Image 1: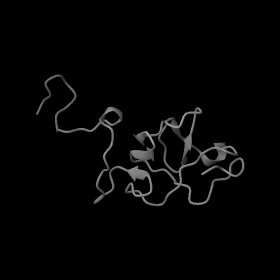
Image 2: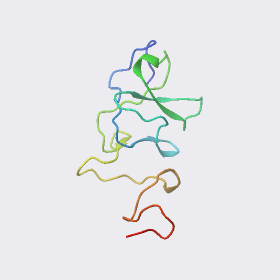
Image 3: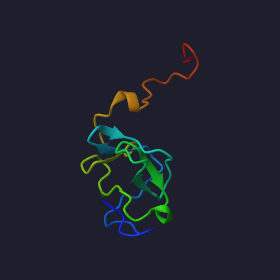
Image 4: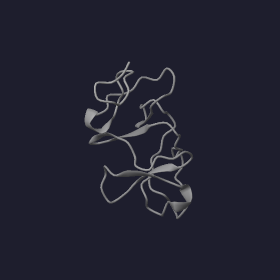
Amino acid sequence: MSAPADGVLPDGFFSTTNLPTYVKLPSGWRRPRLPRMDCVIVQAGGTADDLVVAEPRRVRRGDKVAVGAAEDGTEGIFVHGRPGVQRPALPPDRVGVRTSNRCGTPGGRR
């Protein structure tokens, strides 16, 4: 939804957390740049795929702001790391998922 005025958020805006968050766009799930807690997700740069986390006071009239209350992906916003919440299908090229307990050295250590 669009911000109605500078520094004013639309009803139902999504307040960000410190956990990895993804937004469902027509092109697929995207993670916003500059993650930060207690902010909002805004469409930036004039392209639909460019999302950025912004402080509410920096939102300008007409900015597209993510809205939704559910964090399980049912409303287009998914917060990874919530107990009992299954991760939706995310594009592997945009998501780094750790699949083992190996450290980051070549060959890994156990």
